[in-house]
Image 1 (cartoon, each protein chain N blue to C red):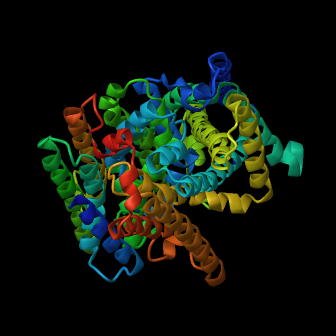
Image 2: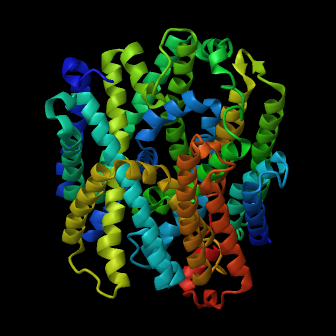
Image 3: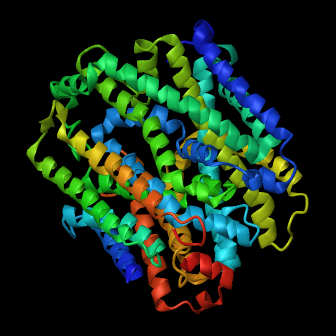
Length: 118
Length: 508
């Protein structure tokens, strides 16, 4: 199932990059954001952890909503929050620091030192 | 152009101290390098912090210090799409590859990424294609790093007026002597421990210079308001104002998922002493990457702000952004630390590729030809020298070509290796045919599209790859994933022939 989703997403991403007008920006961004999530889930397919699928869904929502916000901002011009352009907040926190905190915590929480799984 | 170091004694002292410490580590590690295992995987006895630093420094070349801020000056905040994926890349590497590769090294003798491909797929074609991709990437990366090192040393020492047309050769030779000294004597033992020192210099340099950018620019708010008030900086804060959407998304995709195909990073996981040390790896690796990238963000914002406010002349060459800021707005000692950090970043990436390339030449290729080398330690040292001299000769003779190869070496490695390595290590149904097809697709599509794009750019006068609809590496990487999936679904019976121990690692 995960492998099928990964393959399907790859083909759609390829189509999106080859013909930029073939699908909307948001659809492309959601597909690209899904790639790391699907890869991580595939690598942990046999993991008994319930936390992992939930956390990866959160990661996808975080990355996808950040891209959605950036696409929205592209059409409305520069907006600021606390004197700092909103685009910087989104890039640094939405796509950078919050995913790092989430990923690091989930890896730490689900790590098993023995056996081949995650 | 920079003021020669000889006229700035503190700056020279800091840089000299950094190089001397690297040479000392080379000497120290020479006594600890007795076998091929020591030379290629540091005896598999390295701890968390050293591996994390070595991975970070191998990933971040001089581009982070010199090219990144310049790119931000040119294309605005869209350049950050290259670096923000560090939010998940460290986790991606650990989940998909770190533990499985390290476990594979317990099952078989795995010193290199082609070794890992060989154990996983048991196919000479897959291993040969993987080795070829690594050699192509190594020559591009290594040549570009040596060229950058030569140009930086030439600027710092002001050798142009002393040696004329031989200046670059002299400058590059100085850098090569230091690099080869520790790479040849100490192999990967020297490599990872110099990376530790070089990584510390990079982190301190980035942190300190970021503080200086905030002070000079009046905080992020001050820099933002200067940029927003300037007509000359229009589009700087628009997410896709200066590059097409596809390019921004392509950056995010290639630099986010493509890390899985970077041997200079992935190779480090084979050196880890204990698997349980991986537990903290995403936090330590990701955290150190974030700190190091502060220089990209800080100088990337402050230079446009200073130009917008009329405190700095507009840049003719955006790549000079970092050096202009350091020389004009930073105390001499701190500038020395940052320049030492840039030199460290270049050398640490170069030493990783020297070792990886040497391993392909003395280990992977001879085994593919059925003639394994017996004295791999000695042969590895000789191969390191030959590879460095060959890459330096290419860089001197074909500077433009090498610089070009360097710019798309990341994408080539990403497209060729990421799907086969990452998916192949996590899904036992992926067989050698799928892996080979994917690697070949990544190599051919990326190199073909890059060359086609550059030829088009030259003939039509477009403004480089950024004018295109998407970056070639993004197309190549998605094509490589697509082919891997398609060939696997079409049925690859040899997947069933996996040895039990390998299957257990792959299936988890």
